[in-house]
Length: 391
Image (cartoon, rainbow, N blue to C red; front, side):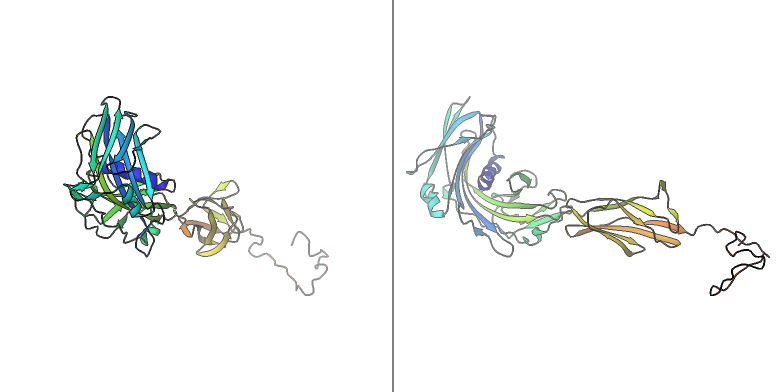
């Protein structure tokens, strides 16, 4: 499904800028595509199966404006019927091959002065039956495969910080401004996550391009994605009805990955009992209320008092941390949360701990009675026990 969906997107990207008339059909045509995959540290390799494909397509200007369509090359390959998409926006036919020779046998380019003709017949609601021809040639010269797209910073693309700009680069395609180049990033279900501008639009890529900037925030964090870099060489268009074109393309797919976002952690309240305060007495239990979250599960929380680890929590109970052993003085509390190997540190909170107020038990000039702890007397000189309240 990935190859088919990307193939259809490639067809659309090639011709969406060519449609110039208000007919039932916007554009139609045929594409031959060679698909490769590149792994980090290696050059692109042809897919082991289904690497070569032929596609015929008809894109409607209104849903189901073209009700049926067929494609027939001028060789012995039989007529093929295109399938309507569920929403009626296009009709398509796709066939995959394991080898280039198998593709050439059924859907050839042809040769100089003898290009294979591809007839696309469209049965439209308002424009009647339209049978139109295209070939894989530019001014009569057979099209050849374009150069293979090769990503040059693929290793760096395995750890993209999605919150920062990232520039994807590739080797020189030795193409021209007439070649169409598209960068496409999809998820594992082939849903489009990001793409470069459509052909011939502002900022669109072409055969001379060697890089493209992916703006910060364009890719989801902590995700494995597929990148596709496609180059296509279009032939001479047929504008007799709507816009028809044939193109030869190469598509290199490659894995990219974005880093998970670091967790967030904050000390949101400091209190003792029902009283929120920044001043506490020695011996009081100081409760630090925390707010901890992360795109990935938080694996541990470290709580520091004056830069020294006070407590490490690993059981998921990150809501609060108690401190009951702070001595008199000014203290700094700080929390560090870790998730997916990434850490975040809270803004420090400063608290003051003071000694409790003194109670004056002796007045100036009063008699201080004491005894040796080794041999305490039973009574004092007045016959009172030493546990008497007067003491």
